[in-house]
Amino acid sequence: MQRKTLYAKDNRPAALSRQGDHVDLPFLMLVLILLVLGLVMLYSASYAQSEYDTGYQSSVRYFQKQAVCAGIGLAAFWFFSRIPVQLWFRLAWPLYALSILLLLSVLLVGEEVNGARRWINLAGLQFQPSEVAKFTLILLLARLTRGFGSQAKQFRFGVLGFGAALLGILVPLALEKHLSAIMLMGMVAVVMMFVAGTRARWLLAGAGGAVVFVAVYVSLMGYAGDRISAWLHPELDPGDTGYQILQSLYAIGSGGLFGLGFGKSRQKYLYLPFQYNDYIFAVICEELGLVGALSIITLFCALILRGYWIALRARDRFSTVLAAGLITLIAVQTILNLCVVTNLLPSTGISLPFFSYGGTALAVNLGEMGIVAQISRFRNHRKIQEVSL
Image (cartoon, rainbow, N blue to C red; front, side, top):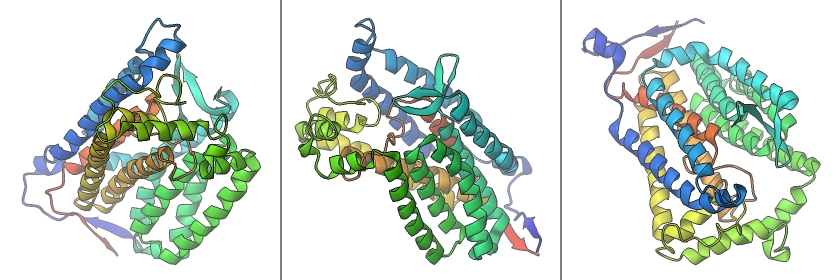
């Protein structure tokens, strides 16, 4: 079976058909609003830690690094929003192979931070290859979806084909003991496989196997018992394993309805660990209250829904699945982070997009949103019809 792509005429001038329209304005505004709010809240959450870490010489150490990466990310957003999506289709396999090499290189030359070896130091900046691997996996799954077509319903393609691509990324991550990235990529892959047409019964069976794998894997890592105990009963060990969770809940609870006011968080003064990273949402709740926290959640929901709207209106199957995968990545990260900060889930180490400190993640997220913006240029064009011959 060969697949032939037929392009439907859309009665537009040829140049306009190739270049598309302007990017979707609501989507662009939502990305920029979240980015600005993220930088503002990062400054507020990090300045006490910055002063402490620099011997009270600077209160903007982490903000400056994040602002630089935001600038890089905005440049990537603009650049990627102008690159034809079909170029990503051709680059899927080379970028996938490169990301695997980067992940393996971490095991050899990676820098160890807080007991984990997940970073490569480049000219004084920490680069995390797993952030690139998330994108390349989504890119490859989107390409395979278009290649498999209706054959994705068959076990050979819908399970073994997608599964082999997934394992190529998950195995190096397992060697790095990067459980949070494994969980995140697995969830995104399941959504993309469902969109591609993989039968639900196989996805459910795979989910069951994944639960067993995670249970065995975390038990072998040695700290699973402490994390589960701290999640269920943080009050039993308030000075050690339950400390971070309790401090997060104190911050959330003390915010009340309208918060203590911007910059007036108490827990960020070295009480709450990682207050500018994984637990920045707790500081948001403390300073902006329930109203402010719900407003930010609403912005995330609007961005995610607009992203899926763009995916549904994409011009071809590859663009639809690629946009859906990139937006699902943001959605899953956001949900998991909020659940961890509010103690609905055990700690996973997953950051909040656009808000948490992490230059690689911020730049990559903005670049990914640039690709979605490029896909949105063709939201008003007729779809390309693909038929099997």
